[in-house]
Image (cartoon, rainbow, N blue to C red; front, side, top):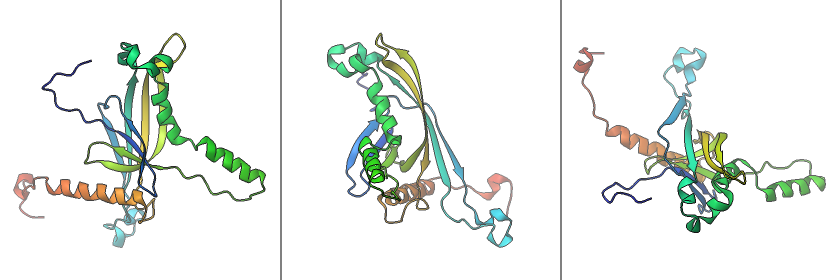
Length: 217
């Protein structure tokens, strides 16, 4: 498929998996097609939620922000050129789905190590820590997230029953300084996201009281 020469460059959203200690990029998972919509919701953390009037205007921390997107994965275009897309011919969109699904699994090596420790009589096993996951939606939105929901609807299959088209629903919770230690790399990413939000808010044109039909408040 060719692109019209005058078309603007399309920036893709996606997920980046990072080693939290070294900062090295472990995997980049671009979305094949950018979703038409992105839903965000905020649970505000207010000290006055308990009815204490002295705390009514106090915030106890950043809100809990959640994000939901619906993404599409389709191997149809690749199947038109089988010589250049052997993976799509052999296994359809299995690799793209697996890249997303492994984000919510401990690795097989971690599970085997945990089983070995349990067999050796270890009573308490530290929960397995996953790499840092970043949701990237343009350079203005790079957020540390934890996947909270992943559902896949496979819609078409090849003769070997490999999926060749699927819809993926992704739910994510933004990790803030309330979730991670302040010195954690993810906290640094969150602070950069918050500071960028503040810079964007400063560019919003201010209004006048008279536009609200009031002279004072």
